[in-house]
Length: 272
Image 1 (cartoon, one colour):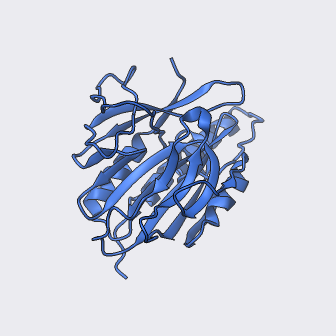
Image 2 (cartoon, one colour):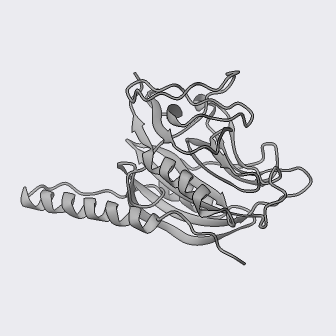
Image 3 (cartoon, one colour):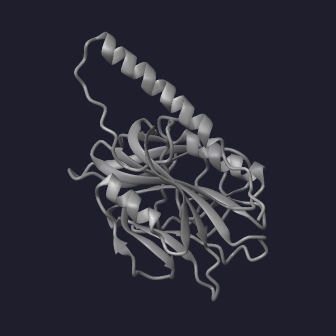
């Protein structure tokens, strides 16, 4: 089976490791007693971003170059989404504080799905950032998931056990999007048939309540029904959230690169 080139995750990981080595050296030089706690399973070592849709908006907003006040990301049934920077609600902390993320889209293939998805007609690649309420739905359009664990290690293991999937990389501690995380990579048989979609997770209702699904049935002409998904389970100041990037296994490199660039742009921000 032909394997499509994937984003340069190794480059991202190496950059994160270099930052971690520099940070550790500084702590030693200052005789600091701090301990680096590695928690959660998030997308590789590197700066990682956030993204998420709001529901019930009839039109797709115009992207903004104003990084301090970007428009909200919204879902709008696959309508084209303009390149630019957007802000999405990812989740809600235990104290009620909203967790937002800014992300920047480049290129011309983007559509306003539940999360940003780039299409080329036969293939897709996309990203997501969400606080999971339930996970591992598999080939079903409705509920029936298992409740999502609130601790990163346990949630990463749940994702590693998704139906019709195999683990390419076991959950590995890393630093991503400026936070401790776990990274794992999955290879999923997402060609469900019968008009069903492969669902990975449901987002917590307080953060929009939208299902997070890998939907293969709209891309019947693609060569492979296999989807490659990288997950980062991230500890954002004590709240566990998931960042992911996915693409059909035989997607062209240019399409995957668009998603990888958007992934690298993600930044968690405090809501204004």
